[in-house]
Length: 227
Image (tube, rainbow, N blue to C red):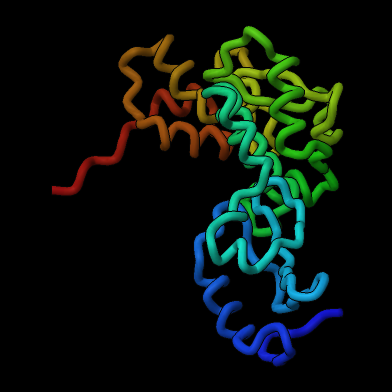
């Protein structure tokens, strides 16, 4: 049997006020979903909550929430296993957001293309801890072997940041001295051959994306600074 906030019943005469307090509280990774109060047994008042990290929903006792006894989702507990686990948990949160959050700036290239994350948070951390055991993860990203596939067992690999940048659909590749590189790297390649190159990194990348050749870039002079 369910009651909506504001509807009085024998087991709660201030349900609406309690719900208002709950929605103003910091519930860790959880948030209240809707205004429906669900009665279990003679006096247990439950409410639906959603974990913003792993995406699971769960009914929790209102009294426990008000006491602060049922805030963070169990998916957070994996982080107690050390800094590497915390790093992987953070990587999962980023993956989950771009696959499921329509407001995420990368959603169009992931969830928008039908790419899903088929792990839950703890499972992802445990799986990647085993998969990348003994590997230093700094400077590396977790990528998909099949770039059109899901984040799932058997389709994960490590890739350096530059390599991951090259895989992004928005990255524009340009030719610099016969080498195809991201436009953001054109400046470094040109400077390596021409130390006196005068354009800024940002200007070089912008012009390279527009199709300006290396020879033309070298001939260009930076704009004079305004006095």
